[in-house]
Length: 215
Image 1: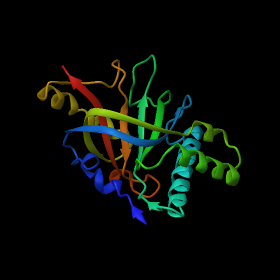
Image 2: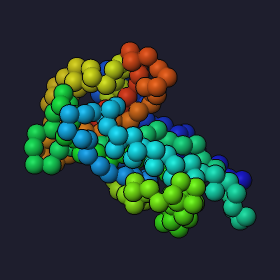
Image 3: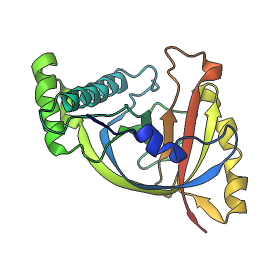
């Protein structure tokens, strides 16, 4: 059985130092994704829709993972990559302090050998086990390249992310770059290396990633 270890192969894209910004160039990668929007008055941690979307996404990933191990020909295994969230606001100003209108795409990188057939087979199995849940219709396999980004490791509660991002403007000015998040249409990107259900808030590790461009 072949093991495809993206955690090892892509480590250089997922290991910034705490408090130190760095530039990375994200190549085209394969993702399972689902999109949605946080309900008014709520946040990601209290949104029923977000919880359902995340459950559907993880159900898909683990169904594909276990199916791959059982293939009669060329079985594969792969460690599951961290959950990622891209956040934005259409027609308004994205504000980290007010999450109750954010739109999102949550996603997980999967190996290139995973294709549309794997998605469709997994959805058939999920519907057999769980019923035809509405969230399943939003699951997608997408390939895209995020391109040049600035990123930093944030350690602590999600609510204190603005303090970590406060150093981004100076870093970008030093490199003659501009932040694309906001009016330029870029998406605030978080990669969750810690589990808020198990880790103390002050120990959570989250990569904060913003697309950038030359001035």
